[in-house]
Structure formats: structure tokens, C-alpha cells
Image (cartoon, rainbow over all chains, first blue to last red):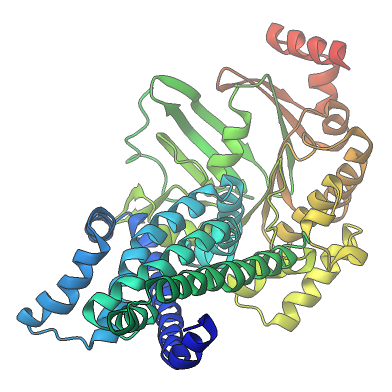
Length: 221
Length: 273
């Protein structure tokens, strides 16, 4: 069977798997950003309990394997009465895992905003919340964008693990096709190329665009 | 001298007129290092006081404490008759909470050595930020107020530029407009010309001159521009080792300094120029 015949036969399943992978990536990226922002800010709180919650979350999700976390969320949480549908369990696990890394990016970027900016905000008598939202965060976002680009690529690749709880993503589909055809080179080769194309020609350019957009907002483009 | 106990400090400062700013036995230290030692300093309404002195003498700390960028270790600072660093609780002064600080701090504005404009906002947006988001003005009112001030500092034509497109002197003028847009009663200038190229210092000092001659602002300034300080100040305070070593009218202090340390400092400065 030529590669084109292979694609003709299994292209539909590969495309449907790819769409699931893209969907998973987008949803877990959204979740990761939201969690990272919350946990990153909580890590800087003056309240010890708030700081503690964020630290425990970051330690657990950075310090243990994503696969184990995925199994916990999908197989163990139901024992405590929390049952998530497998697609949901998949993006929640990936999002929470990468969110823990993101939290440290957020914190690092906030701390990198020059001290003079905090002082100028205080001299204008801004409340701490307003100062964070209006002055510090917009500048921190610019500082952390390049690192987020890397993280999103990690996240895309991390989504392949959800095939292990039988979410029908790209990895799941090619494993299934391989199981019936034994065309390992074609199946896994195609998967390899698709993951690369998604990372290299979708995530990286979007992040570059976002970086340029933010630089223009800073009047520096 | 231990001035942590402020129980016998007045709850408010009376007087006719009461000083706009009053430091009473204010002490600031970092560990064992005493930066300010029981400082007493009154600044009258509309007065322009310039602080000079060698580096490490505590001059900038005076402004930073007044702006509440630094906490104090002893004594009380009063602004417009009311305590800033403390507040009244059951007839006694206790350390101020955030709410009290915000209330009194609204009377004070500050310009910094490195301008500290918000880089993600244009000149106009920098000026409108405080009026809109702190004072609660409508955008329309804030814009009018800001445009007027930008015109006053000669930056009307650059109002839509981001700070990165402006020279140091231009940035500092925008920073002055931004601080004035909050309508403070007291303005603090912390070495506002120190980071500037010599040829643009004049554009910033000219703006401050205008403020002195046309507005009844109370101003405290730290500067190394002795000629400028002599021209526009009502009073000069020479700081040495965390205390006011000597103070007086500019012509007195520059023309006929009484203390040896003042003489040494002034002649060292003269030699450097």
C-alpha cells in the first residue's frame, strides 16, 4: 500500500484525531493560563494560607508525573464522588499540570517588572489590586510571553497522554490504526509530522504574532 | 533617641497657618544603620524646600518616607495638619492602616529620578490613568485635565507617543504632568534631573520654575543642581549623616555657610563643576 493509499483509507480518522488534539490543546491552554495567573498571584499573597494553597498545588503538579495525575483525575476521583467525562478529565489534567509551571512564570515575570513601576503606581495612590491589574500585569505579560510559547508546545505534546484514558485524540487514532494494519512507519510517522506541524507552524507563529502585538502596544515595534 | 512611643505626639497640628508637612522626631534605620536620626522639619504651605547633601546623608529617604514608599521606625509625619504615618484610635496615635494611608497620601505627588512612566501607555494615557482609575473622573474630564497639563509642560504634540519614543527630558516632563494631574498639595522631586543629559536638564528645570512662580504648591526637592536650587528655593536644608546640619535661605546657605561640613560640601561641589 502506498502512503497515499494509506492516507486515503485512514485520513478521516487521523483528521478527526487531530481536531480532538487541537481542541484539547486549546482548552487545556486556557485552563493553564487561568490557573497559572491565579496560582502565581496567590504565591505572592501576604496571607500565609493563600500562599500555602498555591505552593501545595504547584509542588504536587510539578513534582509528580502528568500520567499519574491523569489517572488520578480519571480513575481515582470517581471513588470520591467526582466523575469527569474522559475528554474533560484529559484537558483538566494537562491544564492543571502545565498551569503549575505557568504559575512560576507568572510570579517570575511579575517580580521582574522594575521596582520603579510599583512605586509610580503607589505615588498615584492606586490600590494594590488596581496597581497589579493596570500597571504590573500588562508589563509582566510581555516579559513572560516567550516562555509561554515553550510551555504551550509542551502542553500540545502532553495531550498525547490522554490517549491512555481512550480519548480519541491523534495519538489514540494512530495507535488504533497501527493495531489493525501494523503499518507502524506510516501511522507513527504521520503522527510525528502532525505534532511537529502543529507546534512549529501553529503555536510558534501565533506566539510570535502575540509578542509583536504586545510590543506594538508598548510602542516598541 | 527612642521615638517609637508616640503617645504624647499631637493628634493633629494646629497653627496659623499650620505647616503643610511636618516631620516630628522621625527616625529611619536599616538594621544598625541609622539613615535619619530624629528628624524635625516643617514645610509651610507654598514653600519650596530643597534638600542637598552628600550621598548617603538620607536626603532621598526624606521624600520616600513622605510618599510612604518607606516606613518609618520612630516619630510621626504630618501632612496638612493630619498624621500620615499614624492615625487616631481612641484618642491616641497608632500606626496607620492602608485606608488611612491612601486617604492622606492623596495629597502628595512625586516625580522620580528615572521617571517611571508606564511603558504600555501613551503620554496622555499616563496622565489620565490616576484621574480615571483612582480619582474616578470621567474619561472626558481626565482627558481635558491631562491635555492642559501636557500643554503646560510643552508636551501637547507628543501626547500620543509611548515613553520609549520620548527623550529623557520629555519623559520627565510627562511624569511631572502625570503627578500634577492628581492635584496634589505637596509635590516631591527626587533628583529629577540626575538621569538626564546635560542639554535637556533645562527643559525640566524650566517646568519646575513655572510651577514655583505660578502655583501655590508645597514642594520638596532633592537635587544636585546647586545653581537651580539657589534660584528657585525658599529654603535649603543641608543634610549630613541623617540630620539637618544647616538650613537657611539660599543666599545665606550658599553665600555664607556657617558649619564646616557645609563649607566642605559646597566647595567640593564647586570644584566638580
